[in-house]
Length: 331
Ligand code: NAX
Image 1 (spheres, rainbow, N blue to C red):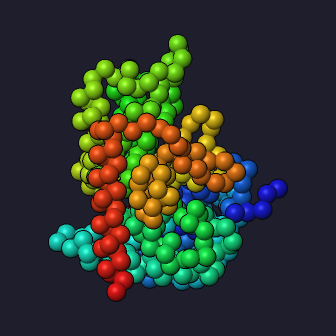
Image 2 (cartoon, rainbow, N blue to C red):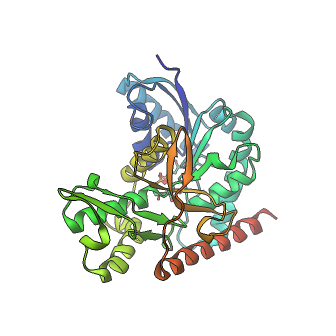
């Protein structure tokens, strides 16, 4: 039998946490033969709710779940973890300035970076979900210098999956037959959902989405804005933000990273930019990646037309501004 993998979920008493921890305990994230020990962190006001989640995990009697650590102590939470899913953060509240929210998250991610750096298992893989996801991940990277930059990522897989879902609905095809959409840039409304290289499996072979959707105006307009604004549409409908889809996408992100992407398929991940596609180096930016043996690689050589170029640059611009704002909160 395999040794258990320790998976940290911060903000585990929140809505995404509540959807995510049972998925992890069921093997959705790491596979049906991989035992797990869950580490759940939240803050003292949520301690009682966190204990309630712990009780439900016990009650669910998950065969793969070999232990649960539920704590408000970051050091205890981070000790020995192999995977860290950072969902906890400070949400933007009505009337708050962007800078104030950024400042709260910078201080959270700075201190949790230090706890991970000092106490996590070597080669711990980190996924930041909490917003502003890309910039929180960048702060975490800066304050955990001994964790390799390639181990620190942020979630744009939900946006990627939303794009697959929109194409599937539009063409009335199975979502599992659509692949190779790309989310470029920030997990925010400036993200660029790109179908230039996406394909659909049809009875007569793989066909480009661009050929099957003849309405280019839709692809360049409503499709993009629907994906960009989907989070807001969910809030409007549910009066709560996306949770099950975020949790499921976080599992997809880690599963593909650890176990690999299928041959011929790429996924979107927020990763540390090396300057590929003329995206400024030193940002956490969402790129198309393939994964093998626990490592991601940015897909190279894709053609970028003028329309796409502008969108890649605009979202990079926003990330550079966020980075500057985050750094201004440090001083
Ligand atoms: P909730 O407010 O339900 O849960 C957040 C939890 O984090 C709370 O239990 C809170 O007590 C805890 N928390 C706050 N500060 C903490 C700290 N310093 N250490 C540990 N825990 C802390 O929010 P939820 O709906 O679960 O969303 C969580 C985060 O995911 C938010 O930042 C949200 O914006 C972000 N999202 C990111 C998405 C993505 O695709 N990257 C999509 C979904 C989601 O909107």
